[in-house]
Image 1 (cartoon, rainbow, N blue to C red):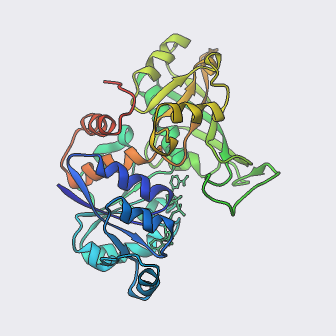
Image 2 (tube, rainbow, N blue to C red):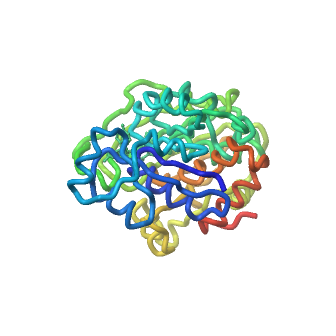
Length: 340
Ligand SMILES: NC(=O)c1ccc[n+]([C@@H]2O[C@H](COP(=O)([O-])OP(=O)(O)OC[C@H]3O[C@@H](n4cnc5c(N)ncnc54)[C@H](OP(=O)(O)O)[C@@H]3O)[C@@H](O)[C@H]2O)c1
């Protein structure tokens, strides 16, 4: 059993902890909070040993009546690997702590790419992370792009991709961030950071990205244009996506006309927290004109990176060397689309 610690028990951290618990080859040895919030209480209720990031914060937990097992340093003694899910730019500050404790660490997409020895996408470059000590799982948007573009690239060849990303404002559980009534070019520069981030997984892929943030919390949406190396029909592309792990086709003709209905589908599927770990590509949006492929996809930002973190653990611990084998194992345990 791989002993896994989660440092940063928020949107991503709590989902990763639950996903680890569903696997038969790894277990949670503890999760770390800085404050005695409802999430700390829920962690204990779910049976996760609760730790505090530093001794100074311990009394607040005791005052709140929450049982704490120790500090981050204590937890690292129990762990083979730590999943750092702290807010962006905090992970890099934690890296020396993990290093001196001799514990492998996975960082998230809010960290700069150099934070890990390599960046990770399961079906993109699994092998690069085998046995590594520090790896960064790319962001939700980059994961979404890597999933569909790598599938197209393998079968048809991507000559060049151009993507517009329409990004959600905050996550649904965040009442502080906006925008409330604006469309914000973010970043205002072109390319946005997403294209270069895809290149941390596929260094040779030609890709241009630009991004705006809009007042919605549910999902991101990407409009994708790809110049292809090989001729393909719309049906060829649909078949590729149907056979691609963690990608699903959704039909507007069946009422899935927006991100709202796609999230409703996830709720109807009984997914925990209404998560949709898969990237949803609109069936009707797929078109090929003069050798150029077009499609529109939705990304559930809170959950698409979760299965990637699980695969990344197996790669870094060198317990499964074949990407497909790990992806199948993860997807089976999480109850995702059967693609095998
Ligand atoms: N949310 C997304 O859509 C998304 C998608 C993909 C990747 N990511 C990336 O995943 C990472 C985490 O993002 P998130 O959305 O999960 O953030 P989040 O919801 O804000 O959760 C992070 C948690 O870390 C805790 N924290 C803060 N400082 C800490 C510290 N020094 N040590 C330990 N815990 C600390 C906070 O809880 P307490 O202070 O209350 O303990 C907070 O709840 C970021 O790199 C982000 O860019 C986010």
